[in-house]
Image 1 (cartoon, rainbow, N blue to C red):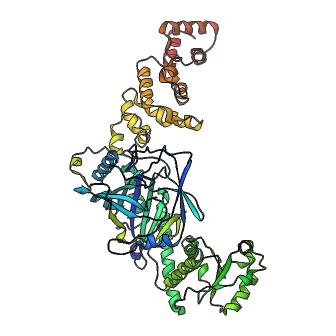
Image 2: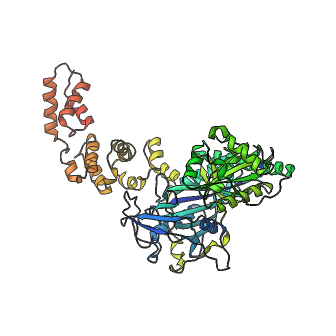
Image 3: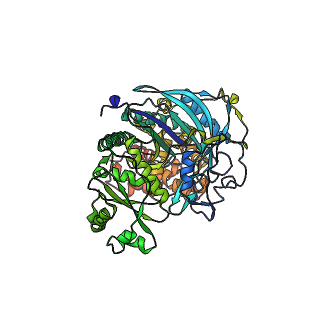
Length: 595
């Protein structure tokens, strides 16, 4: 595609969890709970802003009329997450990391940090809002495409993830409140590859800081528009390598919607009213399983005619058809659609739709569709509003990442959803003006005197801060423990999280002093994973005194006449049971003059 001609504009919002020890406004640890023995139930309602306005995204969520169930464990959540106690002061460690990031991105710190409440009533925050604060503005990063503006850096609370769907949506609260930085770029990105490079560049800089690693710890929201389209925000995208495909797909989707707009204008489409007809009687003897089960459960079937739409619902809009695109709107309220542009034989609905056409007096150029369920007025209104928007073009909206594509999530929020948090005082940034900026990964890598491949991996490792303190003993061995030994232990079911930095310090010091052989590293690490103290884990592996080792070498040579050096070394190491260093044994065998 000619993205310049299309007027492609892309902006990124990158969200990264911070490894600050505790949550942002309470002192609960940042940990993942395995069990959630307690729960509370809530419903959310929108409130007007100070100007008397209602946020469209909040109103949309309210109309969905859902109940939220919050599951929690006191080990990872407290009364502050439950909105039963006021917030504490902002986590100082998290604030420091956010300021360091601001300096890495050449941003200007604000003079005072004011905590704001951002209305969020989709259930992901028990309070109905997310606390967020502007930290810095007006920065940039260098890319191969030129400098890219960093508009703002915010620090905010992470949301609660959903763990169950239905009439009552379940959320887990162990993630709620974890400190998160939000980095918003300018919208000057003009190609899919540039978007990927920018996201990768920012992600690499974030690894220079104390951040949480692993799946879900970093997420990208991608804002995309083209000249004749509209700005669309795609939320929750995690696969960096697939960002170009995401952008390409959204551009293709918007192009198709523009083509549909032109086609509908040619066909003379006029707005329709949100009036659906109850046609349950037509489906009383249907062979379609999902419709029959719905009717048996007391639900109804409603039908709607889309004039002059024949064939358009089969049109591809990016990675899915326009029919699938439309189905996400009633889908947001828990309803699906079936329409006459589909393969009705597959659903065993051919006869019913023939009868519907007659009853609704629908022409061949019209599409007939059905919605199954009760209390479907909001779903039908959403669908009809989207249908009527076809002659306008591409709607501004928030969409949810879905593979390399996306589906409708909710309307874009308005600007009036922020209001001051009165429970947290303003914070002066004066004390952070001269804060030390951590070295970038490239700078760290250049300083390391180890093989390049090891250096490349260790500077990106979540254990780098430990490594930087332990490399003084043996930089290669320390890197190998984190990059290789830890991986092998985890693969075999050992919990490496039980190994403390202090234990590793003791182990590496003893190895460097010649008291413990390198060959004993793995069994000692296994013992630490099983809960042993470092002294107990090392007790059976102290190196044999030189006299004993020399005697063992002489005895083994005598007992194995004719064996070559390699075979003898293997036998001796086996007898030593981890208490001898391979190089030392090889040197002694060589000194013996064995042939």
